[in-house]
Image (tube, rainbow, N blue to C red; front, side):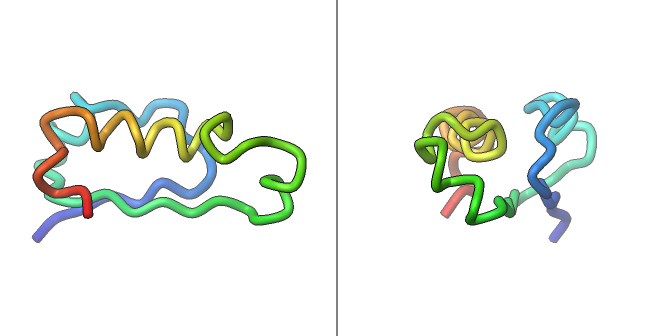
Length: 62
C-alpha cells in the first residue's frame, strides 16, 4: 500500500497530490514543543491531516 508522510510542513500536500500518488494512508508528525503555544487544531500540519480525514481519504484515515 502506498502512503504519504506529512513531516510538520503541510504546504503543497493536498488531496489531489495524494490522489496523484495513489496514497492509501497519510501519517503526520508535529514537534510537540510547538503545541505548547498553539492549540493542536491551529497547527498547520494537524489542520492538514484533519482536512484529509474529511475528504476522499477519509476511509484510509484511522
